[in-house]
Amino acid sequence: MSVELNPPSPAATEPVIRVGPPPQAEKKRRTGGIPGWALKVAAAVTGFIWAVFLVIHFYGNLKVFQGADAFNNYAHWLKNAFYPFFPETGVLWLMRAVLVPALIIHVTVVAMIWWRGRQSRGKFRAHISGVASWASWLMPLTGILTLVFIIFHVLDLTVGATPAATSSFMAATSESSFAYENLIASFQRPASGIFYMLIMVLLGVHILKGFSNMAADLGAMGKRIRAAFIAVGGIAATLILFGNAAIPAAVLLGVLP
Ligand code: HEM
Image (cartoon, rainbow, N blue to C red; front, side):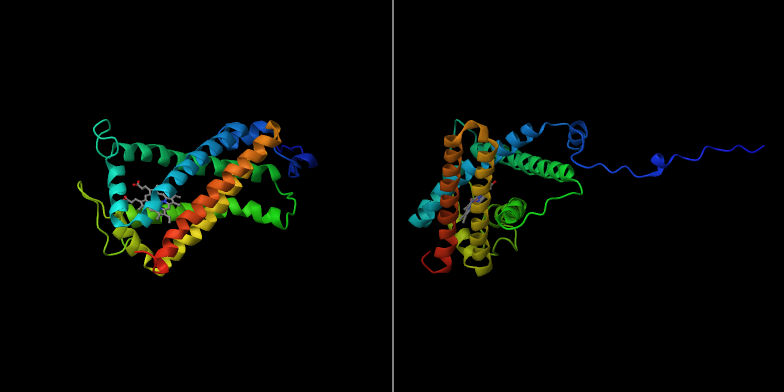
């Protein structure tokens, strides 16, 4: 006995082509069901935490221009700050406990926002050119390079792992720090000094664009708030860029030590 199956209807064999963004529920499922506004707030808050740290860090770094003792004493003080209220290195570990998760959250939610945007655009992308096209590349590019820099920087000046650190690296003891000597030795290598300066430019751009994105997201709050955000971002980016880049530049030009 032969059984004749009904031939599939043409509609069932044709691929479904959806034009426009996928439905809201599907978009959320692909990125963990978190609403878009929550991702943006998380990216903004964690980015802001790092921007505050960087301004404080830049201010501390300027002590290098006061000489070896001032800088080493400052690095040593940081390790034992507010002892005995905090245990030794307690403040340092508290700072790490805030900065490391903030960085992980920042990178994760930014990747989720990027992924969502990509999914929404689908196949039909608008061709963006000129400044807007550069701007869309700036954040991922400067962000990834900054991430690479942070790993290099910690190996170079905190952990002392070669080849990021110099072979003359001296680890801090419970009595003293050698942050000044380590920093000078690192920046005396032209590749390292130039890498630090280049990253400060990229980081300045990243911070400025980050603040202007935040301002755009807060568009509904009015022109003044947006202008204030852009001004704060501009000041932070300028301080971090020029203040920090001045240190490797001074070493490479022989102004320091
Ligand atoms: C020219 C610019 C910079 C200089 C001269 C500099 C210098 C230093 C020095 C001397 C230390 C302390 C090392 C120690 O005694 O343990 C340090 C720690 C640190 N720096 Fe920088 N820094 C610069 C830029 C940056 C930037 C741009 C970032 C982040 C994007 C950054 C992130 C950190 C972090 C997270 C630590 C703490 C590491 C830890 O102990 O866990 N620094 N930096």
